[in-house]
Amino acid sequence: MSYTAKIITGLALGLALTLPARAQVKAGQPFPALSGHSLEGTLPDITGKVVLVDFWATWCAPCKASFPAYSELQREFADRGFILLAVSIDKTAAPYDEFLQRFKPSFRTVRDGAQKLVAEVRAPAMPTSYLIDRRGIVRSVHSGFHGDATLKTLHEEITRLLEEKP
Amino acid sequence: MKTKLRLFLVLAGLAALLSGCTTVQPWERATLADYTMRPDRDPLHNAMFEHMYFSCEAATGGRGVGGSGCGCN
Image (cartoon, each protein chain N blue to C red):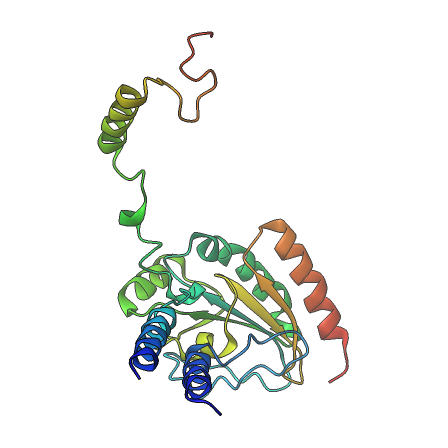
């Protein structure tokens, strides 16, 4: 290998290492374990449950707009084995605490202050929600919150997943 | 030897510049989403900027308003 070729190969390798190595979590793939990401708050036991993991932030307007709809979903499906877990990606606790005190959501919320979990799943937008079946497999990914359209789709999908046998 | 050194320096510089490019991930946009980042956060600034704009361009209402500055409406 010539000197020039060696230099170019070395530089190309160096550049390749700077590219993001992980890929987004998509439908059909297992969702990462919630433990081990330094999430702040009490994690629910999601074993054998249909779970909607929603990544949100206090600086994201559509995220906050989704909360009433998600409260409605939680109220409707909670006693059938459905858990809605809202994962805030706020780095600081103050705006997170303030928002929760004001809104008082009926579903569980935790804070991913270190942004480890959201970086692992590589959420494509804010908000992004992952609907996970009873076996821990992601069945659908919803980027953004589009009001009634998102709510209707989620309602149908959750109903279908709850009817599936464990 | 000089050519090789020059080539190495150019490629090294290029690599350093290219590896500095990054994409701000959706979960990293808290600062960008801040109110102070909005271009229209200050109505007075907007009014002054518009005044300067139409003074320079002689195009009153030429920004986002039907009719432009042609005087035909």
